[in-house]
Amino acid sequence: MGIETSVANKEEEEFCELEKEENQILDPYPNPKGNKNSRGKKGRRRNVKKMVVVSPLQKLYDTCKEVFEVSGRGIVPSPDKIEKMKAVLDDIKPEDVGLSQEMPYFQSPASGRTPAITYLHLHECDKFSMGIFCFPPSGVIPLHNHPGMTVLSKLLFGTMHIKSYDWVVDGPRNESAVANSSEGEVKQSDIQQPQVRLAKVKIDSNFIAPCDPTILYPADGGNMHCFTAVTACAVLDVLGPPYSDPEGRHCTYYFDFPFGNFSVDGVSVSEEERESHAWLQDRGKQPEEFAIVGKLYRGPKMVDN
Ligand SMILES: [Fe+2]
Image (cartoon, rainbow, N blue to C red):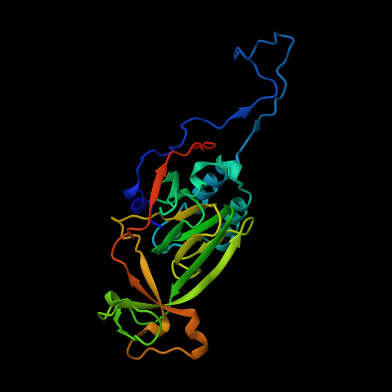
């Protein structure tokens, strides 16, 4: 989903920035005075091996810089780079980003209130962005797109239902549809010949951590998706390139309707394929029921090498 869009509704504007310091270097033979000759003339300085400790999050950041070095709308990293990123993401655990299921982000709200999603911003540059979405049970990120992007999502813990779509290639675009009132429920507001576009279901299933990261691409892999938390859960997202309104990568939210709800001239799918197709309609704005709050990321830091 759109980070820029999401933070528009935030209640608290606090984000993590990269630490402007060098990687922590653990020297097994520390020299507190920093004097190279402190061991005296006879005490020759031995070849000291320095161990550079690279945290899983730092590794992810470094890999993102490499994988998205050439980044832009519709530019997809090579398969080997995607595999590298997948492997790094796969190794990340909740504690590597300072999360535990007991944190308030994951608790159910008082009855009757919409469960708010918490967004922990990790990093954004013109090539990629990184962030964590924290869901209480039943929290939902509504159906939205990722224009021209490659997105990797790692479920850190919990159970998440993902439903995703791709546009039907050469399908009708933004056609005026006629509502078929006999087919399912169609709201009165949707009957006024809505502009809809045909999409095909890519994913419609529960993911239970630990599981492989999901990956979507500009034209496949489920570029439009909806996340619904079955249990409290957390998702680490990497987007390349990031959302950018000035560069035409705006986050659009959609309604999805069963194929049978509308008729569009010249469009038909076989009976057995109807279940796997849907009409998507631009909602025009961020859904009002979508509550998202930006909070300060307090986990292990990343540094810019
Ligand atoms: Fe998304």
